[in-house]
Length: 134
Image (cartoon, rainbow, N blue to C red; front, side):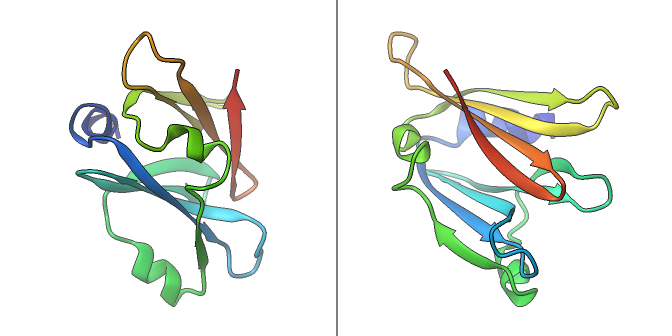
């Protein structure tokens, strides 16, 4: 996953869109998030066996739709609309006390003088929660 994190930061270009995929049995719960950048697309998923997060470049959106996931674009919603057009400057992995990777934190900004947008993705009971850091 570290290689993919470096790719997102150094090679993906500006952030252009984000899409949530909702669980078929739990229509209010986000199971996967698709991130579009100018040059790359990647997904963050909750692994069902241990409720940890994983990043992948595999094009899984068609598989998700075949499994009954419903999707919606969220670029116009907070906090994403503040990040659109910016590059990812940093990505952090967050591990809990049991050493599960159950969080990712993204810092969006084009330069050090610009106020950054920091968004956390947390795996909680097979869903992804979105938090902002101030």
